[in-house]
Length: 159
Image (tube, rainbow, N blue to C red; front, side):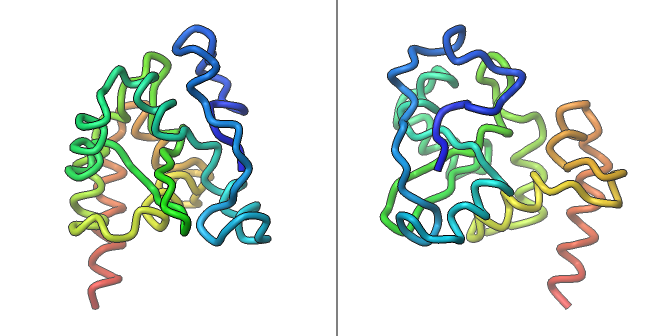
């Protein structure tokens, strides 16, 4: 499992935080170290920041990061072994959270109970977005299009 911002073209770790804040662990998510599912999750959603990396990048304290996760401003995923991970795609170059994330998550997952599913929905390239991801559209300010898709999917799931 990749931690830190390896693979991110828009963030230079040396410019945003000391490299030591990015975990280099290889335990897997969400199914335990070395599982085949971990590589799949990594390829679909990763890379990830660990808690220290997310705090450093976002300039938040542990308490602020936890609060931001609880209200959907920051997407936090948790491994089976209890490690909190933060998908890199949700942070801008200066560590700012993805604009509109809390609005989208409040529609998509009102109880914030499926963070892995939420991350997958946000990161997956979809035909409805011309093979781009919801996160990419949000980064471009197209939050209304993403909200409309989230409403549509939520309505379908609630049937």
